[in-house]
Length: 285
Image (tube, rainbow, N blue to C red; front, side, top):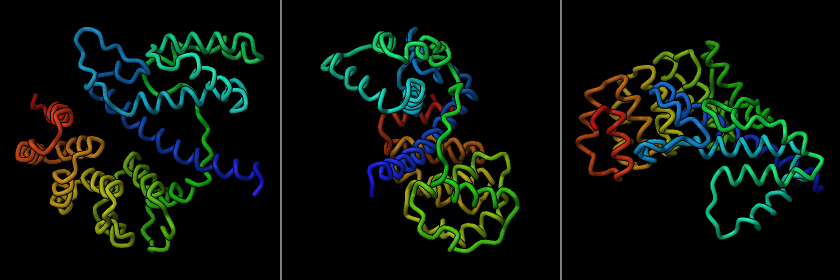
């Protein structure tokens, strides 16, 4: 395989994983906005006034930070231009702690003597640092995602014909994208449709935590009572906050007392940060 072909393949996988991160960013920002914590959707939230940094913990700094760098990379001319900047940045600030303002100042300084100066001068830093979703479309290539997205569209559009062959050869990322798309769409699938899907695609017997987590969210969203026991077993046997908090929030929407009772019974199982954040989600602080 030629070098250019290798790059094209890697870029497809890069865009596919980045699309998953974009969805995670969308979920985090939606959650903060619904809770009235718009400040926590900023690239650099204001944590003055005694705000606990743990309260702002989410995928926002990771995914918004990544998408900011990706935006700047495309803006200045691509990897061939941006990667030398990254090497220079690392060399300049090695073994130091710096602020976002230090980083921003170095971006402007570095590109001030390059052909990309005009592009950097035109950057709206207030928009980049401000709240909400990024103001630009990253335009990720969806070639590797299309199979999952098209199958999701089939179900959202009312399709019910399905077979295990629909998902033949899929990896975990494709399952996650498929289930995330179903969960985030305005159309809430019926319990009957989810049962059909679960039987065809073996979701109910999956041992993959990423898949189980999303499958339980989707079913609780549809108020499927039959999934509750499995969802409770899952949320009380795994301690990762990325799974625990969203599942408890979904449980709380459907069966508030069940969510509270389950958490209180198992609260010693969770690490202190997870315990504190989930307590807040359930109104127990």
